[in-house]
Image (cartoon, rainbow, N blue to C red; front, top):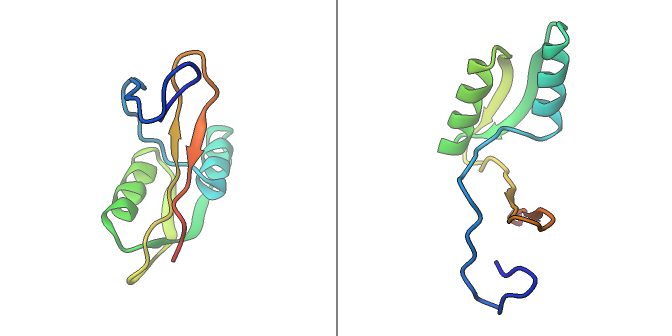
Length: 97
């Protein structure tokens, strides 16, 4: 990813990788839980490794994930957010097939 002042195709350091669960369901559930509300997440995710990691991370944070349904053959959706020093974040979301 090029930043302002760099040439196309230039390699730019973006810093350490941080993986955070997000999206409407996870973000709202986590916020309500932090306020003391009882929360059970209800959502569909893929039966892939990313889905397994997501459920594990949400369970570790104390959220009830019994309402999360694993959909056979589906891929868990995700977005990548890149941010270099002094730049606005850039979001990449793969197209669903």
